[in-house]
Image (cartoon, rainbow, N blue to C red; front, side, top):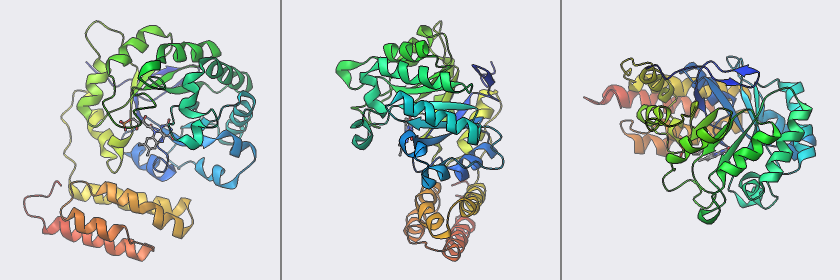
Amino acid sequence: MNLHKPVRIGTFTTRGNLFLAPVAGYSDAAYRSVCIDAGCDLAFTEMVSSEALTRDSARTEALLGRAENETEYAVQLFGANPDVMARAAELTARRWSPALIDVNCGCPVPKITRNGAGSALMKEPGRIRDIVRAMTAAVSTPVTVKIRLGWDDDSVNYLDAAAAAVEGGAAAVTLHARTRAQGYSGKADRAAFARLAASVPVPVFASGDLHSPADAIDILSGPAGEARVAGVMFARGAMGDPFIFTRTVAAMEGLPEPEILGPMRLKAARAHFALSLGFYDRHVACVEFRKQACAYLRGAPHGAELRARAVSCATPDDYEAFFGAWEAAISGATGNSSA
Ligand SMILES: Cc1cc2nc3c(=O)[nH]c(=O)nc-3n(C[C@H](O)[C@H](O)[C@H](O)COP(=O)(O)O)c2cc1C
């Protein structure tokens, strides 16, 4: 069975059902671009503050820049005030024409939840409904939501939160199958995906513990006889590994998984860095790319030494030398060329 298929989300139809999750500090235009080249069907921006956006913050605008190969993307907004979220959605739709506008109902960071935004919205499904309703009244772009299981184990309410979002007009719901209290640790509850897919009339996307093509296939196939999610999102599983999309597309289409060799990873990292230089001021690009470089080095020969080198790169020349050392490590590694 071919599990790789388009999804209709309101008036928008995706190329396929394999997405890059919103990941603050990682899923910027440069990385989204590399993932799209590797087979990602739709990428989400990191969460963008509706308050800052409506105040016209230049830095916030920089988060919304789009890569050349991003013919379509999804913008995620956060906030707790329906009017501000509606104004931010209207501005986003007018200036950046995203395919979707997503509402963050999952961020667990106190700075965000203290203001009633992110996962604090899980405590107020009525507010989720009001936010989505205000946004859908302001834009014709489909509005989607990304929720968690609930605030904590004693208040698991994702079915109610999703129903409220749909009542407000949400065209799809992504579930990160952990509670706010779990943060990013502990196992995601896979059984919740099928329960949510059975309970709402819109597509459901799965997030949480997606680290391999097998995870994606397992979640998309779902338990026998139960409702299925329409798509999956890679988050940490894609950090430093854009080829997770290439391998997963092949696996979803029943094709043999391509082997991703060390030189391909190096080439992707180089392309990623070059794109970053185009999006950011040179110094910012160099500092920001350190964590990305470390992520790419997972499993590379001499990874520890190369990581130590990556974290002190401060100029494009430093990165050239770093990439050269990485290349030498790959060619010097015997019997380890696929690392
Ligand atoms: C560093 C980091 C930043 C994140 N930023 C966002 C964000 O901006 N918006 C959002 O909806 N989720 C965010 N997430 C959550 C991810 O989108 C995803 O739901 C979560 O990591 C679970 O997937 P995983 O277990 O496969 O990583 C973030 C996660 C991490 C680790």
